[in-house]
Image (cartoon, rainbow, N blue to C red; front, side):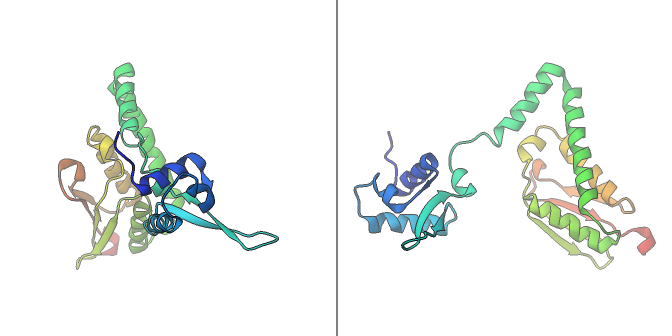
Length: 211
């Protein structure tokens, strides 16, 4: 069995014990506390764990350590593979139409989310809001306004690419959502991550009434 590094051992301790003090961590090590603290500090700087300050009625405050989400994500999980596998199982059990219906249901939920989040009819502001929402969802969005008043929107990441690569309806549904959000505009899809491009690129044309 491959020997665990000190950092991996610290992460394992926090995974098992949830929230611990340096004294509790040191019970697992034979190396010096200074060495262990150095590794803990590096893990904290890298965002894998966080330090909590616990105040007491009597005596000095003390610190505890716990994993962040990034720290938890270093452990094996099925976040990426499981949703795709479930869709494939659904298709095998109930057919392609069942998958289409499920993805259409997701599209309706996306539309409703945009409707609830966007409170402006102004074209420029609406583009800004959509970009913000997509960026918060992990799409790594960049937006640029053209000389014609249109917008070029790029998604440098696709958080659901594992599903979209197998079920292309996800991409076409996304276009339909944008077309509904920008109902007075023409929405054009130029490139797509799931088709091997570096990013998804969209053109959202300025509404005709704004010309």
